[in-house]
Image (cartoon, rainbow, N blue to C red; front, side, top):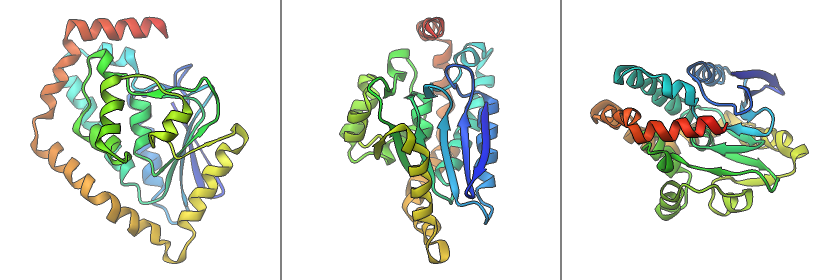
Length: 251
């Protein structure tokens, strides 16, 4: 589900789940383990990438459709929110080496990273399709996506129009930071991590904490105090389930 290897003291974590590289519960657990391993002094940072032509298609639809009741959904998303926040707060540099399509949950988790590099290819698409499926964003998901944008207007357009965009527009919207050729994808990701972490006293760690703490504090307060679980009833809406079934049939 998430393959891991270490090169040049950098963890390379690869989404590897069939053709779509979807996110399952096991993927989340593996990602959490990678983030915690990055706390070790010997580790410089994390590169997130995918196998094949897709970076990550988002959460696993058969898993979503298999939820039996609200309690089961709440249990899953309680863990998902905590792991997403843990990734967002990873003290080491996290760089996404986007090898292909990044959609929905795949894009959400990429936005928790510090830097996003995408392969230059005319067929690669990025976007948030949740609104077309009838699914809202959680507070943590929304805040983490918003953190990576230059303006609320760009954030609005991404989540409300629900359209797919190419790599050039993704760079213009600040969804990604660089567009590079395939051969340069991992080398460039490694170079960014080394440039950021290989400084006296590893100042990056404290600077990142200062930069992200206000957003993380808002997320934590919302998770602890707001009744966010109620929005998950949408998974039992007949129209939503029908849209999820349709997308699954097309994969």
